[in-house]
Length: 187
Length: 49
Picture 1 (cartoon, each protein chain N blue to C red):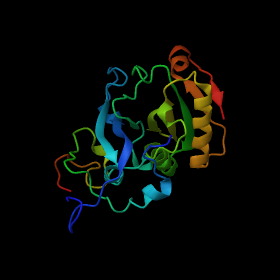
Picture 2: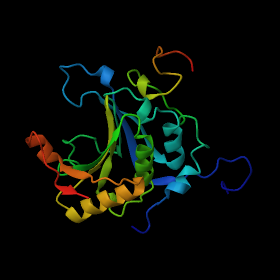
Picture 3: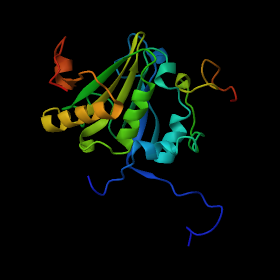
Picture 4: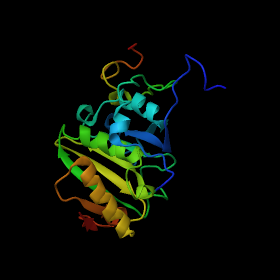
């Protein structure tokens, strides 16, 4: 049997989903470029081992250039409002000061890829946005109108990352249409 | 939820130091250098690391 014998690679730990890391590079963005045109997929992983191989070799949010967005989304879902899976969704957001989101980002990723959310099927992915004075991490979900799922995800996320502050859920459609969109839900 | 491949944070963290190389076949593409630490940051793209 192939599983018996010395010197073989240890068994890999498959994830429930394949996940794609996307990078939005501020230096590659021209003022005239359409929004989203600089987002590019970096790598798709589907095992615990490949996740760490990637994570251990990329800069953590505190070391990224302001303007950078790093997305980790389920494979085949693009981190854009226009993606059909995301179109009716929204996002929970946690804000941090500059340099403070590294553990928030990692713990969010581990909870997602490890399927710790009761409503994990509702999750599209997560994004960390590095800006001059702050960093923010958001979890994107599929169906903004599914209140029970959104509330569960928001509450569980706060517990997982030990967030004590109130966080808000913004519907993508509201964010598109309104200049100062209001949170649909808060927990 | 049952039947899913679920892994706790603590379990996942036990692997964090065992897999420190980029996945096999991984290539750093031009324009993504600032994502990668040390060997790539701010240096020419084709510099060995």
